Image (cartoon, rainbow over all chains, first blue to last red; front, side, top):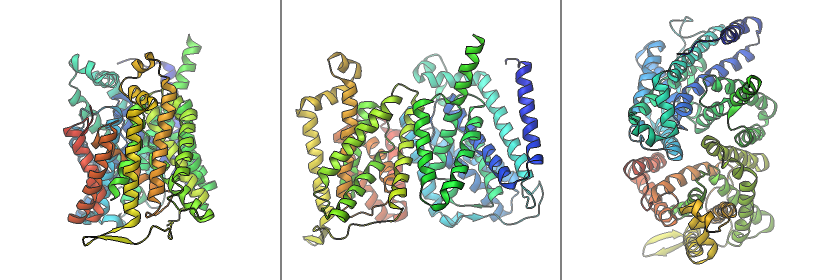
Length: 322
Length: 273
C-alpha cells in the first residue's frame, strides 16, 4: 500500500470539509437534491468501475442491481415491516447472489459479448418486475410513511440527513474501491482486463475473481438502490430498471475516467448538473431537445475524450512533472 | 411473420459487427428513420411504401456512410469502451431528434394498396405482412449473392475474416468499412419501409427492434449472414409461440432468455466459426 503525500491528504480533507459544509451554507433544497443525485450516481459509477474499469467487464445492466436493491428493501418493509437498514443489507446480498447467478455462466464472455449479455439480463429483470404480481407489477411500490428518524431511514422535514447518508455511502464505496484497486486482487483484476488468457496462464483464477468483482459491484449498486427507494419513497420498474440508467452509469464512469478511483465521481459531478440544467431549460416542453443534446454529448465525449477527464488531468500533471 | 423482419434487421447488424467489430446500438434507430422516411413519403407525396424502398435504401446508405466517416471511424482505434458507448450516443440523438421533429405520437400508414388478408387453406395471412416477409427473403438473397459473386462482396468477406491479410492483399479496408456500414444501414432502411406498412411508427420503435436484433445476431453467430437470417425466423417463432403458450407480456423476455442460453452453451452461435 502506497503512502499518501501531504498534498493528497490536504486536497482530500479540504474537499471533504467543503462537502460537509455545503448544505449548511447553500440552503436551496433543489441544489441539495442535485448534490444527492451526484453522490448517488457517483456511487453507482464507482460500483460499475470495480467491474468495468478495473476488471474490464463492461456492464450495461447495472440498473438491474440498482432496482433489485430498491425492490428488496421496499418489499421487505411493506410486507414484513422489516427495517430498511436490514433491507439495505438484504438487498445487497440478493443483488450479489443474482450477480453470481448471471456472472457464472457469462464468465467466458468478453468485451462486446459480455456487454450485450448484461443488456439482456437487465431487460429480463425489468420485464419480469413489470409483470410480477408479488411486487405490484407495473404499479410499483409506495413506501409507507413512518416516523422521522435515522433508525427508520426516513426524514420529512429536511433533505440534510439524506445528503449526509448518501455522502457516507459514497465514501464507503470509494474506500472499498481504493482497497480493491491497491490490493493483490486489484492487480488480478487489471491482469484479467488486459488479457483473459494471459491472466489464466499466470495462475489467476479468472472465473473466481470476475465473480468477486461482479458481486462487489452489485452489492454497492443495490445499496444505492435502497437509498433511492427511501429517498423518493416510490419505485416502479420504469424508474429504477431502465436501460437508460445503466447507460448513464457507464457514461459517468467513462466521462470521468474508467479505471481510476475518483473518475466516476468527477463524471457524475459534471454530467448530472448538465443533464438537470438542460432538463430545466429545455425539457419541460417534452420536445426531446434535452436528450438530443445529451446524445450529442455522449458521441462527442467518446470521439474526443475517451480516456475521461481524469485522464486529461493526469496527462497535464505528468507534463508538469516531467 | 415478424421473424423475417428480425432477419433483415439482424443481417445489417451482423454485417457491421463482423467487418468492424463495432456493436451498433443505433441500428434500431436506423430502422426508425427508414420507417419515418416511408411514412412521410406516403403522407406528403402519396408514394406507396413499396415504391419508397429504393429511396429508403439510398438515404440510409448515405447516412450510414456519413456516420461511419465522421463519427465511428474516429473511435475505431480508441478504447473499446468508447466504441461501445459512441453508438449509444448516436442512438439517443437520433430517437430524440425524431421526437423533436415529429413528436412522440404513434403513427400508422393506413391506406396502402396492400390491404386485407389472403386465405390459404383456412389460415388467413395479412397481405402487408406476407409481402414484407417475401421482400425480406428477396433482399436477403440479393445481399447473399452480392457477397458471394461480386468482387466488392468478396472483399468485404475477406476483411471480415482477417483484416490484416485483406489489407496486404490490396483491399482498401477503410473503404470496405464505410461501405459495409452503409450497406448495413441501407438494409435496415429497407426493413423499415416494409415494416411501415403494418407496424406502428414512433420515435422509440428502434429500441425494441435493436435489442432483439442483438439476440438474433448472437443466436445466428456473429458476422454470419446465413445465421442471422435463420435465427431471425427462429426468434420470431419463439416470440410468437412463447407469447401464445406462456404469457404475452413475457414474449420479449423469452427472446432474451434464448440469447443468454445460447451464448452460454455455444458462444459462437448457431452458424458462427
